[in-house]
Length: 571
Image (cartoon, rainbow, N blue to C red):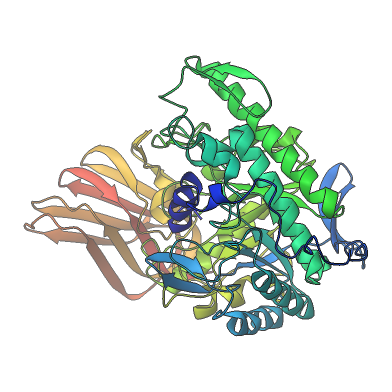
């Protein structure tokens, strides 16, 4: 997620363990037998993973190797939230006290609703926490892996496939020996993935992790995929950028960092090299495993967005050995779906599956969970229409600790997105919602657009109270929504920027021929500037046959509406 997880992941990645230098680079999982022990028999090969990828009519799709049917992942990001030592982390797999019992209950509840997939952090346990994946004596902690195996057994019993995602190496276990040699004056943060030491550290970890799961008897056929990074990016504000004029990366190539073209070439080639080495390490141990990478919309895309130090470009991954890609996008806080997908830089790609591995409803954008649920169904349908092959909501539950997004289990979201309710995610059907202006075409007298703001008219009818239509000019201004024929009981206008002074706003409900069916004027003699203002009016009787709703702001000042609603029913 582009929030707390990214923050703690960067910190953990950029700061090697203080114990790492005391463990030899060749350290492996503590599950391996000691030198004096009788050699163990060669373990049998891992079970074939149930989910594979095939081409059908020129398009890649997931399929179930047992049933031979297309498999569409639908489910949740699964977190068992806990604060430990000031860190927000997942307590599911920790040795000692953990949340496995709660996790089993969650998986069973998801299965009852018809879901078939989850994504969960394999190593979101760090800092001051105890019982994490890395063993201070070297390698990986056996009990931690056994807990992961128990989770996989519960998932398999529920008919749910699991994606394990990562953001950083274990703090303990000796997996930061290479990065510790170059961090952090000349290389730091996720940029360490470009170094020879970074590649070798991660390669060693992945071999140990996958073989460790096999050694503890984990049902590998319950693993849908291994995700190398939750969200991949390089960091423009971290070394070597701004520190070195020239850099040699893990692929042996040297790049001029004063040349933007050379910098991009270094990023592209270095990312492919890193990914290909990790995929080879995993499949050397587990040949039928699927491997993926997560990412979010790029600031280098066609839709202007505020500058971002996180450098994202997934296009090099199309030429890598990754099996599929995982896109993350959230409505209501900036870009809408079409804009986010444009900035994915992957429109039109069909030869590898792409899933929407994170999407969710922020409470600040959607204070009403009914609005949140409607937006999630709509967002999933839009992503599906653009060819995405799976959908994982953020998150299932855990809202007593984490409250930025609505938990699906605590709202109608889990039921409304459920496969029995929406057999085809591209065609959810009519979702009952009282705002008949939601998602309808909108036009305006003018709008503000640029790298710091996207104030297009459609932002006023997306249910989000964090996006807006901005006229880009003073009153008088108008915005008109094509409702398409509806019965309207009430109108509601919301803004977070109410200018001081007299206010006059006229709302007209228009018939198909443009004649006025009803008019209401919101008028105030004067007001102080406020952070939020809601104007509501309920008509004496429903107004039938409304095709367009026109809002004319006569005064005062700069005109911005965050949300415009028409409460009623579609005729």
